[in-house]
Length: 123
Length: 247
View (cartoon, each protein chain N blue to C red):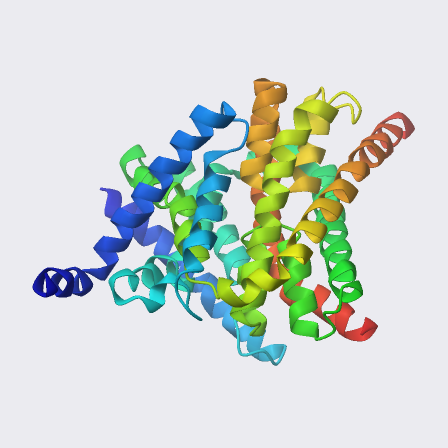
């Protein structure tokens, strides 16, 4: 049943959130630090384990895949609830940071790929 | 008329489903008809989301009662829930395939995007740490910015800027990848994994690779999946403290 998959996803999510909240507390933030990352980690380990044991069928998996297909719609809704009226006056910075930072990242790819080749040759 | 609107407000989450569905439908149609799919429908849809937020107030479109359900659908809970679910595509055997070079490129990619973004934000007059960190996180992806911003308590307008930065990155990646693929030697699975790790914005990476060489998509998507999770962990913690030391 699909709800089995959603329940497993919920378990991983909640476990991740608890760790994230504790980490936030430890770092003296009110917010959640890395809850998403821990949740993802749990889901990967859980899903792998249950799949190998054969407990996890396609129907359960489709419950999780439904939520992953809701990712972009949720992000669209998230965008629509921001304080854009105030942000619009600083639209220029968004363009500058978006363009320059992306170009900078692109320039790094050949460097890393060269480094990884050298390492292979070295071994 | 009033009764109808009141009824719709009572069902605000369902109204939000309908609204987002219509936005996505129109965005994918625009993408296909006017850009031949070159600008991804997802990027157009997120931009449309920011656009309609303009007509609301401090909580964007959710200030209008009819669209208050957007705050549930786009709130932190469902956002984080759907991000976690995207990890379903990865398995441990695949992670081993990406190996150290995948992990290394993730760290370099997140660091490069974050610090270049933070530095530019500082240079352009943002000197409070919450804004600098959130804008730096936005330079990672359009999801890392808001997750980080919420974690450290940044203002909503800064979060909006960080989303816009991430969207611009996603569009640029999609458009530029086919053009510079040869220059950055993006012709084999290994470089594709490095590319996914360094660039990170999943929708842009997948769309860019699809236009370059569809066979490379799974390799780039593999490392890109971990980018968001790792960046959401590093930006509000380790990277925040590094910025704290620098400012």
